[in-house]
Image 1 (cartoon, rainbow, N blue to C red):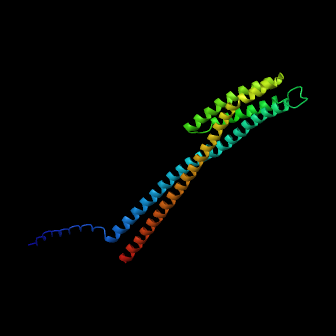
Image 2: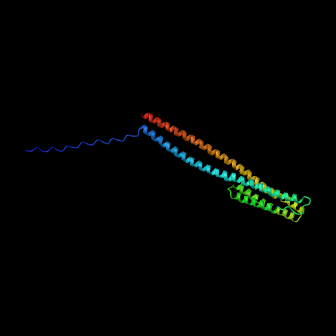
Image 3: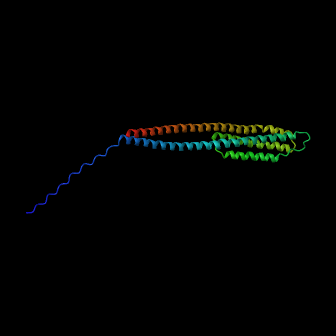
Length: 234
């Protein structure tokens, strides 16, 4: 009689899979610190880009709206004054005894007129506020009026009519004063605008400095937090 084979042994039941332990206090600290460090780094980068954009805009305004405009307006005021001086010089020369014909100033007059018109076009191409545009139109009106009236002075001098030339010279004074006053006001407004831009640039620098200091302090605190977390873990 043969022995019966032993019954197959039942496999031992598998042990239940242990539950995943939650993050320890150390890991939570490290995760929070690194997350805040990343947020601060990105915030610092975005703030720096925004401030650079503001600085670029303000610098553009300072260069084109301030420096370039002031230079053009200064030359324009000088050319306008030279135009008036040339007119007065021609009158004075014609009043000298023994002067039979007027002093030839046509070439100088044409050069100064072209210079005023060139500088006017140059200023018109620059960025300006509504108030500056209004003042510039006032200057153009005064200049065209004055330049047209000054022709009467030279025309009277060319025909030997000194009294008529003197009368025309006195009559075009108001137009010259209007044009000169408009240029002077433009220079004043441009200077004030330049001071405002300077204050804005200082404000950008101060706000950037405080933000960078705050970011550096925050990063330092995070680093200290990481060091403390590692120390507690050990």
